[in-house]
Length: 149
Image (cartoon, rainbow, N blue to C red; front, side, top):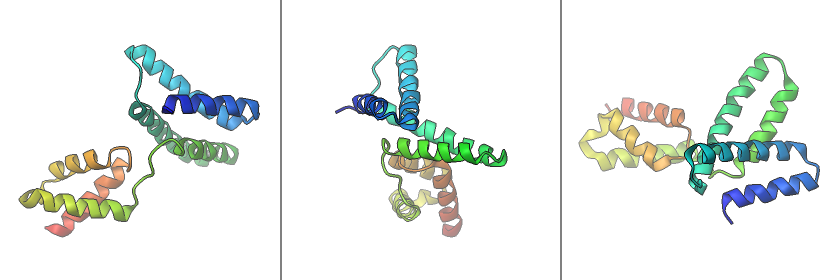
């Protein structure tokens, strides 16, 4: 079953169960998918849909910080539940240790270029695409390269 159909069936199920958080979260994703499909006039692949969901997760994580500053515990809780729902549809994120191992392997593959930050980042981001936060990878690569010099 495609991810788009999976989202659609989960939406219908949430409507039947009167689960408004799941319904609203899935509706938000479906709206974003539909908007992009209309704008680009093409059918989105599962990979494209995962990218949309990951973007929404990132936005929601940023919103949590703002809600905490505004002392809105109710919105913080709701947003965390929405993130949990969205996380079900994206690949499991890599742990820090897995990323560090990949960085070491990548630097060994590149040989003499292991001090070339741009080349290491380009190679790493292609390997971890969609499975790790870019800022975390950047920090870990900087840390590794600082120790390698």
